Length: 198
Image (cartoon, rainbow, N blue to C red; front, side, top):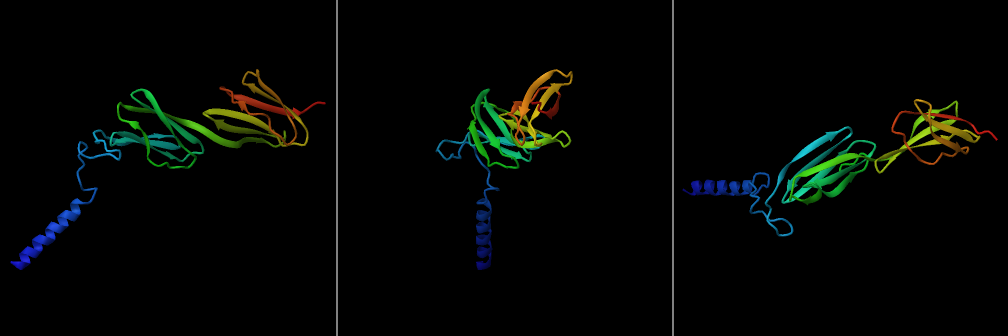
């Protein structure tokens, strides 16, 4: 009899330990309280939207929409979030960053979002050794910019034209300097630099 009682006690203890595991306990959204004391009534499974170089996971937990960015690109990524069609906030991820799960807003409507490349550190896209200049590229607040850097020892006169040879930019660049940052053309463009005539 004592042996049976011991086995029953052991089984009861094991069942209590198993049920205390948060991954095994069923969650009743109607009864679980959130951190601010309100009742958790709404939730939604996390879904992941994949893009070139990054992905965005969103879902709902305890009345709040939440999001997390996984960024493997060279860009800073920005996601604008909308709840019920109204702008809620924006989440950002730096290059090669995985963000924490961040709150977006209360679940009073459906969540939608628009993600895009937002920032990019300047880099050399093209190096014209014989002509003595470089084409630099960067992105700021979702807009691409270009600049021409003079790697020679003399000042240069540079032209940026479209495929029809129509002039887009005409700049002078001192030796060792780069031009001001110019908004990148929306179409294909071509660069040409020569020594600045005195």
